[in-house]
Amino acid sequence: MNTLIKNFIFEEDQPQRLDHYLSQKLPEFSRSQIQRLIKSGQVLVDNLPPKKTGQMLENGNRILMEVPPPEPLDLIPESIEIPILFEDENVLVMDKPAGMVVHPSAGHSKGTLVHAALAHTPFLAGIGGKMRPGIVHRLDKNTSGIILIAKNEASHQWLQKQFKDRLVVKKYLALVDGRPNTPTGRIIAPIARDHNNRKRMAIAREGEGRYAETEYHTLHNYKAHTYLEVHPLTGRTHQIRVHMASVGCPIAADTLYGYRNPSVKLERHFLHAYQISICLLGEEQPHQFQADLPEDLAAILENLF
Image (cartoon, rainbow, N blue to C red; front, side):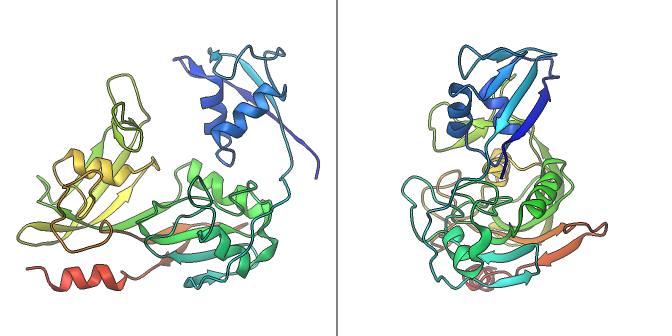
């Protein structure tokens, strides 16, 4: 497969780091991969090699980038049983269990959704990146629910563009501690990495962070909890967890953003990606996929009052 040439024009009023900008434009590449490409001379800014990976871009800068073809995959497929909600020649829709990481990363070299998907569909190798074959979007380790995996490069680009253009409708089921001020609402607050804890995200300081927007609708009120349908309109890391905590209603059993002593007996936070609507390759009408609430979460609701 030949190297692709990508051209971008930076059209933002606020300066931005080159590596940050390219990471946003090419989400299939990690930040470190982008930085290696810059250092190896595969990126030009106004026809000149940048002086550093974090060179600041200004409005009107033209970026030319050589995107290498997918690298051969050396992941070892693992036969892990995961429910398949839908499959055709272009996409695999799976119901990820809580506790499973989507793709390999530091400390998670085995047992990921990618390993399981490769055992089911071996020819995913190389689609969208060496360590993330076929991955279009992600869920937190302890969030269960729907994950889409592209089975070829055309499908990967088609699906990923819909996520980028915010055309995908994602709905989650969440149990939160307390009760929001209004039964239906919208939270608009930028999100950035927490300055005091790099494992957390946080509502950004003024002038920082990335725009984030979340809608919620109350399904049922309990004495000390509220059961919500949540619709994130953007896709920031930990977005729902950060936004709900910011209005005083953290996700139940979320010890990172909520209470250290969980209000319900649950080994993970109560958040489930239960529905997604997206157009499949070459189609104009969206398909809607749904994953039922897992047994551990359903049992919590049965015992609430």
